[in-house]
Image 1 (spheres, rainbow, N blue to C red):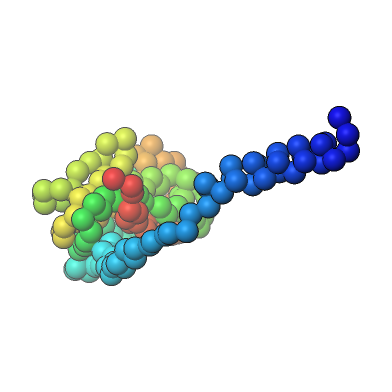
Image 2: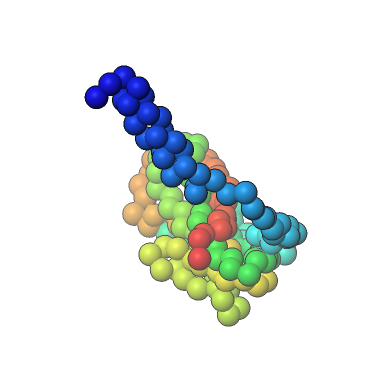
Length: 168
């Protein structure tokens, strides 16, 4: 084959390739805009409804004493799919080591409102709504405490009742 024939075949192949690719180029097109929207969020809030009180007014504790501090909270959970868990932290005792070591601090919560449940595995859950929750902190001075706990002072740290939103 001569050079002229080879050139003609190569040129024809190039034109065929260009024409074959021409079908993938679109001259027409269109688009549409989807409208935006406003999103409003809910809330999860906890507030003290009534100040806390002790079951009695403890001043000088003795082994075997158990006193409970209660405070009423208002919990507001607003949102179409909101769920929350209650956890507590704090209540650690400090001060004179013998007395602090012979105190236990146990926190709990209760409500008669529907949608508030627990504890299940130590976890309370709430659904959307407003709840009256009684938060309790029970402090017990071991009955078996010895003489080393006399004339000592201990402090029970504040207990924090935290509600945390969970995925539905």
